[in-house]
Length: 138
Image (cartoon, rainbow, N blue to C red; front, side, top):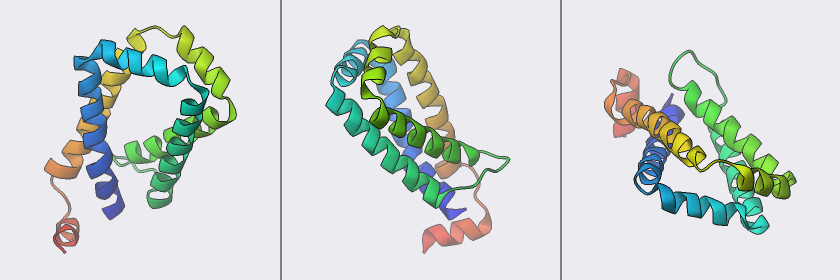
């Protein structure tokens, strides 16, 4: 359970801040996406980073549970699959990105904000088991 809280304490705020940033500065994030997806090297590099991050999450947190912690496992799998896809098919990723609607950034921002908010809340605010509180203080 320690891994769940550790990953959520990092991934939650990062996702929430990215979501807020994209909602506040939608035009800037659309341009960032356009530039990222316009460069095959950046697509491949983001794939390598996504694959490495996803595998790190899955190695630390490989379990599916019937609570919020499954969001962490799902995030690990999503990053892993997206990383592999970007490495194997950077030109296809560029094509998909070039044909996508600018509203996609807004939808993704809302998803990032919601998932990041849940993870942040669970990691920092929600009541943690007694054994977990002792482990965090050590």
